[in-house]
Image 1 (cartoon, helix red, strand yellow):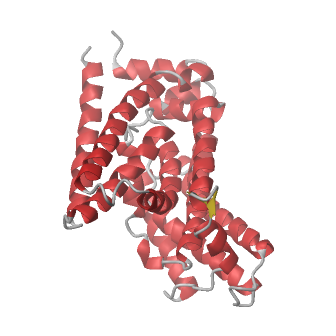
Image 2: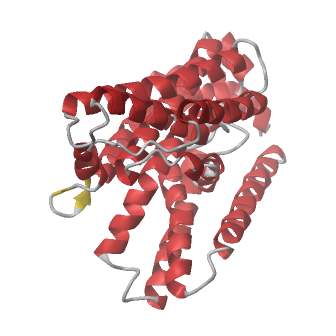
Image 3: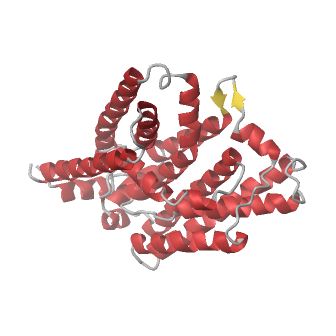
Length: 349
């Protein structure tokens, strides 16, 4: 049998169509099944414990809305981790994008939240996306071109982006978010029950899944994560692709910042310190391997809701909320251990 290294090299050397539908996609599918079963079991457990509160429409809407910005971070993180990279800056980039977007809309509307029209809101969205993408480009260039380890680059960006946001605002949240944005995207619903914020997150997630699983961009992402040198030898422009992946992650962090503005009606500068770790945890819980080459968007979607369900379920069950990060941490370590065990099993075949 081929070793894990040989399998990775053959996957990366194969045609682009085979790279995305090979080992990485198959293993991601098996991991996603187990993660999905864990999520279903948690939902059933808390529904039995609190049948009057957990399995309700209101609770489902609240869970979905609160998870929507984090889902955008996790989707972008999925691409990065599949390439065997990491991005610790997404939470700070979210804050920075929200700040520059809020300040832009504030100045264009003269500080009157009720006077801002959709032209101002669309400009604010564009500013948030550009602000997030700019940090992504910076991260990508430093990682792919200068070959500085992604852990160090994005750790530096984590502090720099947050510091820049605090400098722009003097550490004071911007609260003049347009009322139209809050009432439509932030708290509005479609079809009477589906929050608009959730619809936007679902649309972006579907587009990301299409990009990862059916296009050359996604196949190259898997190939680079499997073996970057083999991918380079097979003709893939690895440097350019990595810059594009980190840019995409920054872009989605910018969108998450705009969504957070719409939901909270403020920039919440100090409220996203753990978003980067939560996004990484969600992706890993969803079956994406920290060693690269394996992962799926669907798995990350499921992974996002495991800590969200635990948090809500613990509160409803009367369990102290401090147990939630302990439970998530234990599941996360177990997921990484299982990933390593499977890798060793494949190597020993």
